Image (cartoon, rainbow, N blue to C red):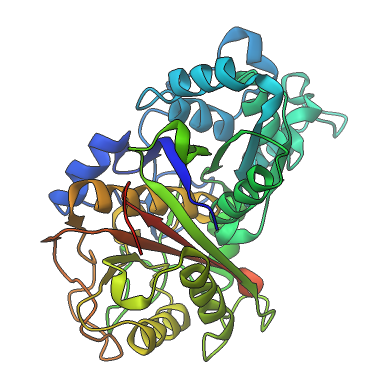
Length: 397
């Protein structure tokens, strides 16, 4: 594919607001996980809760969109000068020539949960919750397109944990077809009871901080996050990092368990390399999906060993902020981009006793080395798999 420039990007998660805070936490190997202090009923687990969401207020003009998920989105949009970058793009292309493509798995379902907990005497929603716009899956994208004053295509992508990785692929296709000149992509998912108790019912939640690829791992830690990126043609920003390629596959093996041989994941990975025009030996770093569930990590470890040489570095960063579900793709893409920008390989936090299935590519501690090409894996429920390939500006395959 023709590469695209990533002219701006940002991330907000349990380890901080904005890119500088993320890089500092990664360098210090400092986790943002904490004992669960969020759910409406007791649940023993650790969560990646973002500080400051409760204190964030939407502008009065957007009051109809008030809910935790949209407050987290607004908090994320206000980091790293992202709003100014979008404003400049809007002036450059026009509001109708910029797409907005956002991934989420739960949207603002937390607000609907609250509404049902506060039913009035007649069994209806309380007056302040009678806002239909926040009780539907498009709430996030509808709010953000209004906040950014965009008028181009606006899509919500909801493919579980690959949601905010798939948005990059959708954006690349829209720009290639000439439907738009630029795209704002990203994702937001916030903590809610549906996610915490839902994953716990599947026996996937650990009572301790998650330990990706550890021999004794026993489940995930749920987190929340917001992240965004602006994609434009390379000639607009020749010095910006690039989206080189993407790969997508749906193996549809099982509702919640990955294919035991990683068929869909490998198809996505190899398609990303092919579309990017690189081979496995040129990849410097892979941000792994690595949720700390038994099967996911086992399958992904085998895939890395099968495809990549010992010198490739790979790690999961979910030990820092937890599994942020529909926002995982964008936040981990931001970490892959920071690996390129800073030549920094984040260690696999939580993996103190490596699973024997993990081979030489795994980076258990922080490392410093030049990274020209970085991949980011996102594997969702139902076998919906995405791999993204990024590169530094000027990289030649």
